[in-house]
Length: 357
Image (cartoon, rainbow, N blue to C red; front, top):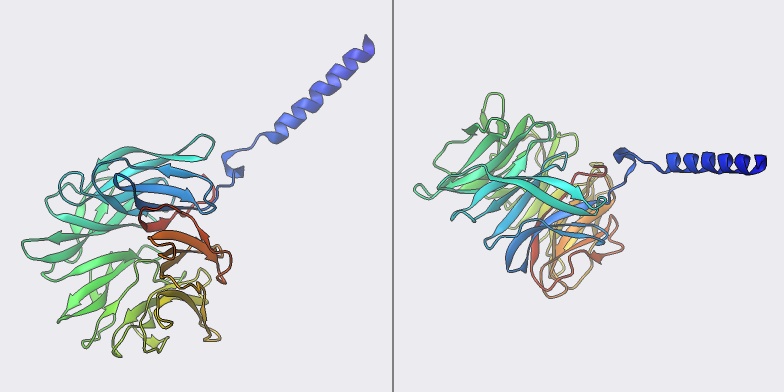
């Protein structure tokens, strides 16, 4: 009897230790990188989320109208997107939550935050505050303006307020200013607005051709450099400048078009789309060695590359399977995998800045 009690106590202690060691907090749970995108696989264009290993898929919005152009808050807890469900294109916000042991996403508390008769586009979250910027189209004047909105108070300010065309706003990494495309004297230029004094500055100051920013991340991680596309030499090439517009440097020089440049997380490489091989491909440019490499190496069209956070993985768009799909590959172009793999069109994606919930 004595030995049976000792054995029982020993088993209880071992079991307790094992259970204690198996308990993990949310901080210990690793969440695979995810992308959020728009797809027409269910009746119309809805918002979906999948991890970059294609092991789980969540259908976020289910609506008979068009939902697209998603944006994610820095903590990955809020989703913003454009929808025409109220008759015109407006910006909606929802809270994102995990379910089923961190394998499925849902959106709760959906609300129309712009709620206007105009059309609103391209929402982008501030990296620091509960604030977004977006562009609004005014059909009466046929122009776009850039607005900033505080999501806590609902207050909205027109940052540009001109009769021209301002679109595609992006926050700087420190959230202190935005850059955007603006129409100036018949050409597209890149502008800067400081959020403290609302002062508007033309960064590119190139009156002879169009200068265009990518819809991805055109800033270096420290915010000191900006990459952009310019047509100042007759076709589209990649340029780099300081964030105040100084020291504009030509990066690529090719008879075919180079465009959609983004910085790598370490700031040592520029990734861009090029048509120099007869179709759209993803290329990299080493700032140190100035070497250019074809990463995607495919006969189909590949474009719109983005890095996932600080990782060595690239996400990109491709039509190599006959329709628009979203792919991932290694930093060197290896291990190219179709993430969405559906006969419908998958596009308008962003990567989620999230590892742990």
